[in-house]
Image (cartoon, rainbow, N blue to C red; front, side, top):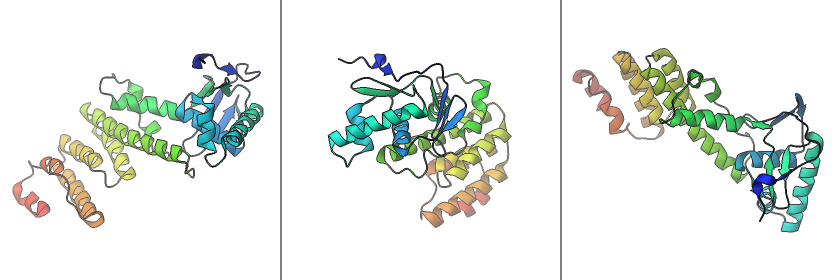
Length: 254
């Protein structure tokens, strides 16, 4: 049985550094030089970056779903061969499996590691984890509509939203209210009707003692929900404002 950890490397890998970017579009840097592989090569690199070690049959069927198996495998071999000119050593292979070289730095891998650290409350955070920059909105391969891309795009979007919400809460718990609000509002800007993001904004306003700001944000969110979806905020969100004087909340919640 094939050992996936002993995939042979394409010729002449040397010590070349590869950087593969899939957020906000495809980009490949090989040893400091931008390369432009053909679309079939781009798709293969993206698939391996997203899926990890992949069987040749699976890769061929995923990338050329309408082709016969022999034709799809032939197209796969051609794509691998053409990638050698773009970056020798990019793809490791054996008779049955393909994967990216460990020398390839992939932006979505870095993003997932960073976001997971924020979402997983069991992982102690470092100071650099509190920087919102790497979480700002970038879409996976915009304009690509393959099912495997669409699924991964949605997975990363959800992970990003949870990471933003977790970061906002972390900043607030440390008393960094302004920074926390910046992050929470970034989440709201990205998904204007996502209630959990609005809860984060309201929680930070209340923690800072800005009740009027919390009520104002609640009013704006409630109005948007009513106009766009015809629904009210959840009881969980309503309960956050229980402490607001009754005469003020009655007008807003009836």
